[in-house]
Length: 264
Image (cartoon, rainbow, N blue to C red; front, side, top):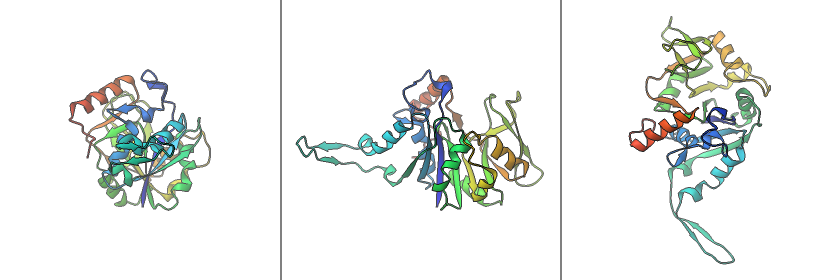
């Protein structure tokens, strides 16, 4: 079994001009939250067991999934005292298992992942990603690539727009290995961590229960220092949704009908 952890707890301060009423993963691309789009990418490759790490306004994400059947189905109501409800539609998301894990309001990403650890104990491998970015990535190929080497982790390297910290990658062998992370470089030639990561259980040796630990700093940097972080190079579409402009762009892409990340 492979599960996917999705970080859903941040405040989304850079996109507050879209809405302050909902957490960022619930901001819609088309008729569905961006979180749903991320989950569909995994589900298309048979990974349908999710652990969502909740924080800021997490109850709204709970509400979305608790009411999901009603959102997507035709409904017949009996307006009597008994109030019987009949749902008519079938839908592919009925195969999903979603664990909604409360991980704290101000907790950082590594702290959120640590608090989700108990839900991952039955997994030899697990995926980790962010609830605010989409890509046309082949999850099956990513997992196969991770299984082909003996490193603890694999991160997906993508080509950035220029405002992210880059990866310095060693190519001395057949397997690209992260050497270190560079903060906010001026050069646009490198790759960045685009999420869509895979790890085995040895990851926990690089983490603690510190709620203020950021996953992108201590754990990933330590793995890179030890040569334990491989890179799956993704040359296709990748787009985060951190700003109003990026939200508008993703909605334009969705409305065009030519949607790179849509797989079914």
